[in-house]
Length: 68
Image 1: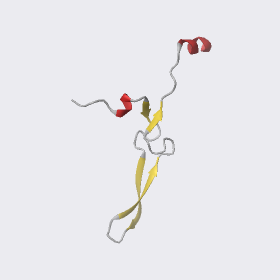
Image 2: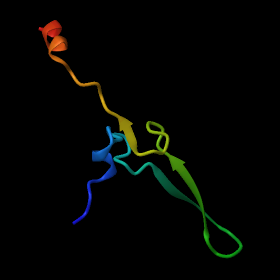
Image 3: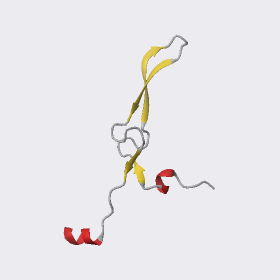
Image 4: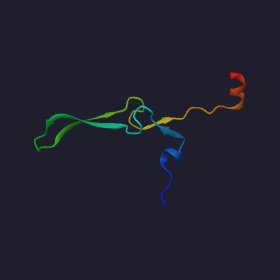
């Protein structure tokens, strides 16, 4: 049996902009001398490469009474 995912054990949520895939590797089309491709690693601008976003504050009954 596996354990809970880290996003459920801590008070965070998956980044809505990158869906948790915080870093993308983009090929430049060129190759290094050894034949491997040259890659750029780009982080999500919203979460800065963490893949998570802070939770929104929970509403309390006092907040609901003010809104009504």
